Image (cartoon, rainbow, N blue to C red; front, side):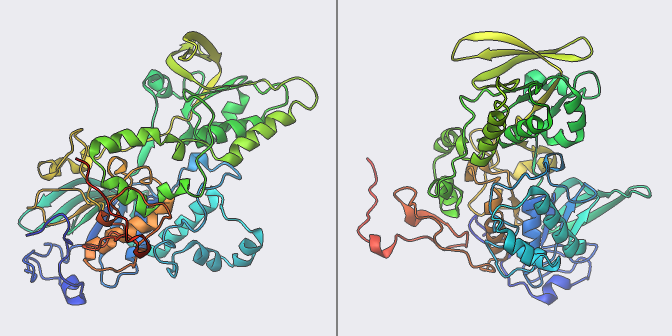
Length: 506
């Protein structure tokens, strides 16, 4: 009987098993082949960096049949925020594959070699690469994987087929030069990487939904599409103090004349705070911490995530320094720049003033004061939220297990916890912050998570993962964690700490 900790492909992956094309043929494990030929071993829905990482590492597993479907016409990674000079907040080693397989042909260094740019990169001495370069690297990987990554394919429905013991996917292939075509594929396992979507606070949703009318109210994800229009506005307000908010404010500040900046930057956070970037602080983005977090009670996990906002929602030190430097430079001729930065302020309501202005009703909770701010444009750097999976998983709902808050349960191998009658696995990427912590959306854990999924999928250690990844020992029961994601392999206390004996509280 299959349990949550057992691999979903129990037999070794061999060429005869994976390439049989006889419709209805029974395999040794009892599952039927797809009526249209051999089923996929893994079908991916969505192609962002995380599923692209999985596709790249899966490419190195002999005999594994995979396909990843994406409704967009090509790979696009936050195109509205590819501001000139903006860099990733993680080192280039946090590419799609390196932290799981440094020898992979799909590493960032392999990309540079293919472009004959290794020596320029070597002399540039850059540890953090520009976002635009990361986007170009990902598109290079997509091109190299060929038909394994299928753009212009919108997955319309997913069903579990009990008789075939397969997932059935209906999709629409969208063609730029002709009518759309319907298709169907079958897969033994699924992985959902549908990503996140821009979040607009409720008081501003009505204004943001009517971008073409009057003063623009846009989300930062579309910043570059509207930058020229924003620069023409006499006054612009940026809402939100995360990395995106800081980058938008800095870019606007640099492009507006001294003395006529006309900028407000407000946030409900208590400060324009720096990201936690100390060496030990960064160990919260290691597999060790992810494993520790997963093992905590649900109520404890729910309380932890909001308190850890400075690990992932604050601003890079360098960006804050650049903002201050730019503001300081504008005081050299005497006077202060026309820029107001105010933390601790929430937007209560908002509305339009005539056809050209927006009025924000603000509240400062510490002062217990309210005021109004009239502006000509608003940029909402208010972050992203995980896309709801209800549409994709609607037909699988009877088999899904949920927690006390009605969220999907996710095991340590990134599989949804389902009824045991479902022999196929459904994996998720960047939809498991409530079970795996703040590292869920972090690019630095992409390759490791992909390797965990592939090891779980195949039932073999296709990618050897480290037994330990942090100097910090999280918790008093390290022997209970499954840090490397390999079935049945537990982490033991270090030999030099043999006297460490966890006590059970009574």
